Image (cartoon, rainbow, N blue to C red; front, top):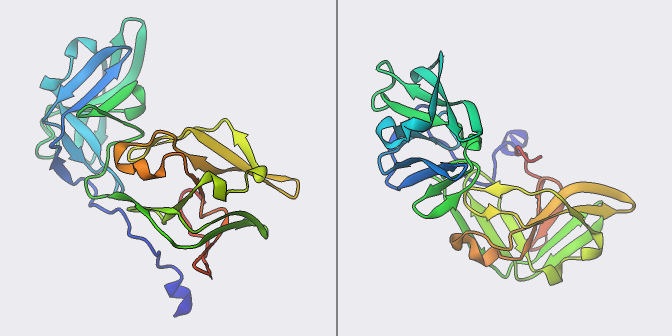
Length: 261
């Protein structure tokens, strides 16, 4: 019985049915090489997998003069899509758009789904969004706390704090963001890594951790300029729960298993 209980995560999952379709109430825009590729208030969320959706855009709200018909189609559960690329001046993105036809799921005919990474930038209203669309069924909260938090690696204390900011994000374990003065920075090694999050923004700093001569890559990060909703974490440092040992209010936490493990 105990072994089965160990498999139950201590944080909520982000789950929606595959191929779920919902309207997007936000204005969505995307840009490539300085040109606006799409501008719509009629996008659809489509869950291609359970964790977050993609935008499907009415073709009438796309700058069709930028499209390149690739003269081939692709089949999926959502229907038959004709592949299109984009050309803006000398900038070309091949086969980055899937234009769905009459056999598509209800509501998706004459919509086009662009590969996120082939655009230079995406916006919900006037706020830039990174990595993928925000999941309307997920939430991310940054809450100040007076819990005691100690971070260790191989028995070495990396940080101790009694004033953390806890970030609760659907589908991920609780993250503990700590004041820089509570972190033993002598163990931190600056890294060139940068990452981005749809909810928090782009990281400004990444660090590996050196303990007893061994460097453990990319264990800690910080956001100097997070999104407005996550301002409480600005400038604070967090460590991957999956890769360090955390003691919270005297209780040693087990390392969670996630895609960051």
